[in-house]
Length: 76
Image (cartoon, rainbow, N blue to C red; front, top):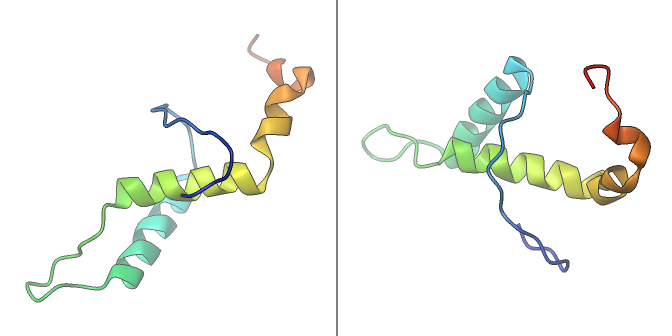
């Protein structure tokens, strides 16, 4: 993902709905198609990362992170 802002790649454990993961994998396979041996040539983990990163940019995660109210949770 190309972005004009400085970014950093992090590895994090997140919770997403199972159906969202299934949809990403299914659509990634449709886009990639099968090779001559019938295998898919796509890294679905990279696609998940790309999709989540794009979602965070498109939905202004930076502003969300700046809002102190978002640091308060029911478990805190």
